Image (tube, rainbow over all chains, first blue to last red; front, side):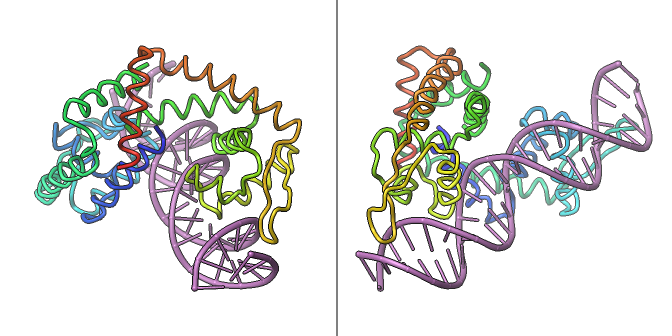
Amino acid sequence: MRRASGVVMADLANTLGELDLKISEASVLAVIGDGPGRTQSSIGRRLGIQRANMAPLVAKLEQRGLVERTRSDGRSSGLSLTEAGSAIVERVRNLISQHEVRVFTALTPDEHELLRKLLAKIRSA
Amino acid sequence: MRRASGVVMADLANTLGELDLKISEASVLAVIGDGPGRTQSSIGRRLGIQRANMAPLVAKLEQRGLVERTRSDGRSSGLSLTEAGSAIVERVRNLISQHEVRVFTALTPDEHELLRKLLAKIRSA
DNA sequence: TATTGTTATACTCTATAACTATA
DNA sequence: TATAGTTATAGAGTATAACAATA
């Protein structure tokens, strides 16, 4: 499992490198795109990224002008995509689609779907 | 996939920690147990560990008295388990069995087997 | 020329601890 | 007390480059 994951992640990392994004960064952007306004802690919990590691990650995305913070609370901000952020997320989604057909070409759609379900069972066990 | 792998590997690392072994170290010991006499480069190729990273790993196992080298070539040695090494490999195999039932408890044996096959397809694609 | 073992090095990912400010 | 953000730090895993000795 570790090695299959390694193969897939290496291809994904390579693909996203084209946009100068790490997998974790692209994931965060995608989550913000799905539903703006979440705090970085909340996004971290959803993605399994720790608070401590979200801080520099989000700071970098903000510095690149992809994400902006809107103060919601004295201690937290809701995150949303800038125009540039929305544009890059669209490109991310396209690249991920290409990546998926490339990596899962050895599997039928049914097998792909089954794999997702089996992995989800393990993740939540 | 990355996160499912993370869950499994975290449990395995924790389990093997009882023997003060990393996953990579236990893997190397198991491969040597399966067929003594291989060189460390050969073992590295089989496990996807680079030559450069095998050196300190094997040196550590040798220092712990688990592995010994038998000069085969002017530049390489065949690796085999010491008595202590054989003993620990047996404990490793038991711990891995326990780990597998624990982690794959959410899957039926058929699903477990299917998962193995799907992952193997991706690995070699 | 190619391979083995080795050292040094660096980057990523992940994890914990501790601190501040706020709820 | 609990939560959000932050900083610093440490442990793994993984990767490349370079070298000596040997095939």
